Each structure stands twice: as C-alpha cells, then as structure tokens.
Image 1 (tube, helix red, strand yellow):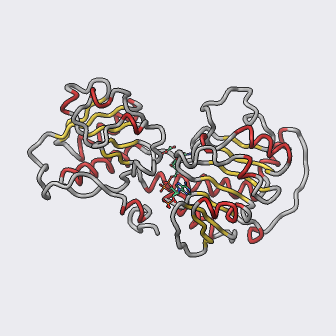
Image 2: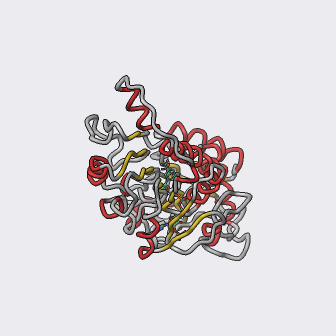
Length: 339
Ligand code: NDP
Ligand code: OXD
C-alpha cells in the first residue's frame, strides 16, 4: 500500500530504524557534521540546501572533510573501502540511490544505519520511463525502430491492451507505482514479491514457489527488483522459458539481474520477442556489445530515473533532524534481506 503523502510503500515506513535516545536528546547543542562523497557539481546544490535548511550542520565535500572522527552522517553512492577507519563515529549512511547494491555491506560496520533514497520525484521518473517502455513493447516500437533503420515500411497488427498481460517483478515503491499507472490502459496486471500483497486490480504472487505461475502469465515482464543474492541473475534461461512464447522484457532495475547471453539466446529462438533495457552488466557497454546492436533491443543509459539533488538534499535534512530527535527514519534498509 502506498502512503499518500510521500508515495512510499508502507513497508518502507515500517522498515524504519535508528537510535532512540530520549526525544530531543541529541538536538540543538551538538554540532552536526555531514560528509558528502559523490558528484561535486550536484554536491554544490546539496551544500546550498544544507546552508538554508539545516544551517547548524557543517556540510563537508569529500575529500576535504576535516577531522573524520567528527563526521556522523555520510551521503554517498559508494562508501570509501576503509570506512570504519576514516569515519569511526559514523552513525548514518544515506545512499544517493534508491538501490543500495552498489554498497559493500560487509565493509560498513553493523552499528551504521543505512538509508536508501525515497523521493516522489524519483518514483515519478521511474513511472514515466517504465510506462513509456511497457507501451513501447506493447505497440512493437523496437520492431519499428529497426524497420526505420533498415528503411523498411511494414505494419504489424494491433493488439488490445486487455489482451496483453503485464507482470511486474518487485511490488515495492516503484513496482506498485508503475502498476497504478498501467491500470489506465487496461492491461491485465500481475505482480511478484517476496512477501504476500493485496493490491487492487493486480493479481499477486509471492515467493520462489509461485514464480513459475506468475511468469506463465506475463506477455510483458518488467523487472523492478532490488539486486540481492536472491535476485542476481534472475532474468535467465530458466525464467525466460517459463514465459509465454513471444514475451517481451523490460529491465529497469539493475544489470546484475540479467544473464545477457541467455537473453541473446532467447531473442534468437524467438521465445523472447524484444526487450528494453535501461541497465546492463557493464555500464557503459563495449561498443560492439551484442545487445547494444541488437535490432530487437532498445537500450537507454541507466536513465529510467534519477535522484534530483535539490529534493534529495531537503529529504536528507529532514531525516537528520528526525535522527537527532530519536525518531525513526523512512527508507532504512534491512541488511539481512539486502534491500
Ligand atoms: P523496494 O525495496 O521498495 O521494493 C522491492 C520489491 O522487490 C519488494 O516488493 C520486494 O518484496 C521485492 N523483492 C525483493 N527481493 C525479492 C525476492 N527475492 N523475490 C521476490 N520479490 C522480491 O524497491 P524500489 O521499488 O524502490 O526499487 C527497486 C529497484 O529499482 C532498486 O533496488 C534499484 O535497483 C532499481 N532502480 C533503478 C533505477 C534506474 O534508473 N534504472 C532508479 C531507481 C531504482 P517485498 O515487498 O515482499 O519486500
Ligand atoms: C537508483 C538508480 O538506484 O538511479 O536510484 O539506479
């Protein structure tokens, strides 16, 4: 279920954490030292937001962070490998992305809370992209693009949306928001998640034992799973062969979900008709990568959505205030599950 005010899944609200000193304990008196380790141009926007929204904080851009032991909050896409030595008093690591698979969880001390990016703009970006891509797959656009490149003028018969079943792997913040958007077009919708869900207008399946039944009714398969030990390589031969013949694929999650050679084989056999990929194993791919040049594959350079610095920085300011007041934060990840 989505929270109306934030667009976040209730499960994320439940998955909150952080220390709980007596309310307001850490507040005003102690200095707040925040280190930022990511793109410096975006960092300038973050810095300006912190100056106006959390003026009591000292916002420091990597590598000029001063005394590392003063830093309690880190904003980063990837953490430094020697995190514990460099920032011994770190309390919270804010991931700049919605996904946290780029972080080496083993190298982050257990007492450090990890918070992923949840932001309505990021969700909207993904809904726009994935809706576009599902419609493009439904309307044969990869074929028409290939036709144009070959100077071919050919028609394909139109299929009603009501006859094209769309299955979403991952019914979290992004998967549920996409399902909501796709309802308008009349596609029969189904979704697969780790835990059981009830979502109006979506036939739901959960757990590995229900994966096959879920896949057997997906004419278009969308991957919006987090990348974990359980989901790495999930878009593979065994998955493709359980899809109806001629199914179409959208991967907008992570390149690590897809076994690229298995997709190439499934496209060659025609079992998978066409695909849209926003993410690849290696980004950017080699210029001669077989999927990059494939006539039935459309590729975009990991732009399905993005963290916009202004809104993201505002969100992190609010989360730091909550943390210092001993209140739970939204988006805390569960290290055991890996997302
Ligand atoms: P959430 O954590 O909100 O949702 C994840 C969903 O996947 C949940 O429904 C979860 O089930 C399900 N899931 C996790 N593991 C399994 C499993 N083993 N089997 C079945 N279902 C599973 O994530 P978001 O929706 O916010 O984001 C999803 C991913 O999208 C991110 O991790 C990131 O990698 C990717 N992403 C890509 C972007 C791009 O630009 N290409 C931009 C932003 C994100 P349950 O609900 O039961 O926990
Ligand atoms: C993310 C991404 O995880 O942009 O936020 O991929």
